[in-house]
Image (cartoon, rainbow, N blue to C red):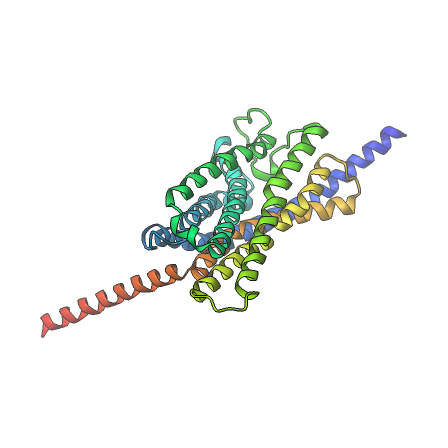
Length: 332
């Protein structure tokens, strides 16, 4: 009787998971198709503008460049993901599958940390303007290098969880269809705690504290600031960082503990498993939307970005008009 009951439970689990598979394949394909072109264009323009056309003294520019680079790297992997979710076959090799899988989580956690750094820097420089004048660009470069190393190492467990030994030579599976490595409860709890604390709880506390302190500095003091416009831009920047974080990364980190418990068969109820497994791909798609939302942050929240783009556009327009006028004068 116990064996029959256990067998029935496993059949029920398999049925619940099979129902969510078709949904997530369609969802991933549609979402990545929507994200790819806007994300590619927006982040290409952002990298071009941030690297070449913003004044060297611009605040947070190094963090923004690294944030745009993280988004750009993830966007470049989307065509392969789209191909897989439409055709449900992977002809590009196991190593390329692991690289694309890794870039997804690297983008997520690098974006979280860089949003946190932008919020901290804007808030601190607003409250202590003298530090903004003495702060060196090389400090930001060192911080960014350190972030890439730490985040890169911390994302490796996600790769190992899906890399359960050498893949068969003719394997056509990738991403969510890869088998998950079974680990003990202690390791699962440790991985969950580190991912949630370092990747969500601490950054969210810092980002929302910076938003509140920036708002407090600007609005709760009964005096006129000398650089009021710049302070308002700083407030918009920090609030935008908080909104991107809240919309893109909060759903995934709220659902992740339940998803892990589902994969460890700690949650056996079919309706609960169905809800958790259905929401997991939705939360990952929301996380990928940051590739399109971050460039909005650069454009609408950074005055220098808008000025340089409009200036470059004006130069191109004047050049075309002059070439047309010179051409017409030659004909005359």
